[in-house]
Structure formats: structure tokens, C-alpha cells
Image 1: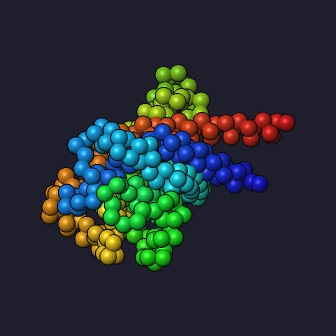
Image 2: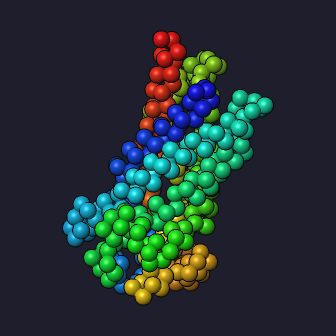
Image 3: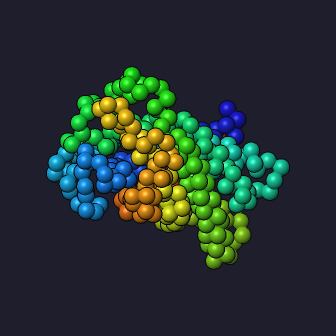
Amino acid sequence: MSSASRWQWETATAGAVAGFATVAAMHPLDVVRTRFQVNDGRVLNLPTYKNTAHAIFTIARLEGLRGLYAGFSPAVLGSTVSWGLYFFFYGRAKERYSKDREKQLSAGLHLASAAEAGALVSLCTNPIWLVKTRLQLQTPLHQTRPYSGFYDALRTIIREEGWAALYKGLLPSLFLQVSHGAIQFTAYEELRKIVVDFKSKRRRTHSGSADTVLNSVDYAALGGSSKVAAILLSYPFQVIRSRLQQRPSSEGIPRYMDSWHVVRETARFEGIRGFYKGITPNLLKNVPASSITFIVYENVLKFLKLARTNEKLA
């Protein structure tokens, strides 16, 4: 295997491990966020929560641990596959753009690499996220037969709604993945350059690489900071996607017909606040989660590099 191909698979492996660790730690907040996002105040089969803490305690009391971890299987699968594919496509795009150019890519090329990776990941994983959303929204108030799990949900959706239903919410998902990932990774790469340069100057060396200069605390700060910027700018796309991916009524009538319908109805009845419902649990989940992800990703990558170096020396 060539060194370039091995590097791509190393980044994919690091991303997949990071994604699993992130989901396992933060899933209850993901359930709360999804339920806040779709609650427009006009549907009776959705519970109402006062705030994030009240939502967690209410779900735990009424639905138990199963409720807090509703949709966990597709969340693990989706996050692991998404992060693995994202870092893989992102690494390949950066490698392609870096040919015949200076060693460090510009912010614009980091943006293009992240946007390209986000679009490809969205196309691959939309059915998984749709199932996850449906499972998280199942409550004791639902009137339709609940899905028993991931595979039952897939079979039922295909049987009752057709294959096209698996790609509901794809348009906002594309906008979300491209804009969110592009903002996050561009911010991460640019902040990392600044921190590496700053710490290298303090050490009075100009040859320091990120591997030798940065530690886990740095990666946590960089991951969290870049995530806040991405969330604030792209969050409305998450709300639109979640509302589109709700299960139709028992008569088969969807709550919203398309993205524009969601935008119109949300703006009309809820105003700008409607597009930011659930942002508190989202920040609580994703900022530390992003820190965990980048710590795991960078350290797994270091481990794989070290293993490769030792293999060459052996």
C-alpha cells in the first residue's frame, strides 16, 4: 500500500474511533435537542419541556434509559461512518489540492476541501440520520405503531413511504453538512496554524509541527471553538432537516411538504426563535463532543503514525 493510501485510511480510522467516542458520551443531549427542534407548539403528540434539564429528567422518569438513548444504534452507526468518511474525503481533497502548491493550504482550499467532504458524507448517510430522528421522536404520546429498532424502521419506511422517503431532508442536510463542516474545519485549521506558530515562537523554534507542539488541551480548545462558530451559523438547517424527517401521521400525511414549507411555517408561527429551538442542548452536546472528537482523532492519528514509523524501522 502506498504511503498516500495508508495516510487516507489512517485518517478514516481515526475519524471513525473519534465519532464513536463522541456519540457514546453525548447521546441523551442529542435526543433532547431533536425533540426541541420539532416541537412547534402546534402538535399534540409531542411532549413539552421547559428547558434542557427538565427534558432530561422528564424523559428519564417517563421513558427510562431507553428514552434517553432512543436512536442510539443509528446514531453510533451514522456518526462513526460520517466521521470516518468525512476525514477520509477531507484528507483526499486536501491532498489533491496540495499538489503543485506550497505545503500549507490556504483558507479557501481548506474551505473547498471541507465542503466537498460534507456533501459526499451527506449523500451517503442521510437514510441513517432519518431513522435516528424518527426513533428519537417516538414517545408514549405517539399514536402510530412504534418502530422496534433500526432495521424495523428501515423496512417500515420503505414499505409505507417508498425508497425516496429515506432521503427526506436531503437538501437542508446538504446545506448543513457543507456549510457546517466547511466553517468548522476551516476555523479549526486556521486556529491551529495560529496556535502552532505562537507556541513555536515561544519555544524559539521555527520547525515545530502540530504533532510536537500541540497537546490534548490545545486540541480540545481548538475543536470546541471551531464548533461554536459552525453551530451558530448553520443551526437553522438542522431544525429544517429534523422537521422534514418526522414520521407522517397515521393517515400518511407528512407534517411538512418541503424545506420552503418548513421555512414559511416556522417564520410565520415562531419567528427567528423557531430556527434556533434546541440550540442549548446542541451547544452542550456538540462543543465538548467536538473537543473529544478532535482529541481522539489527533491522538489516534499520532498512534497510527508511530506504528507506521516503527514498522519501517523493524
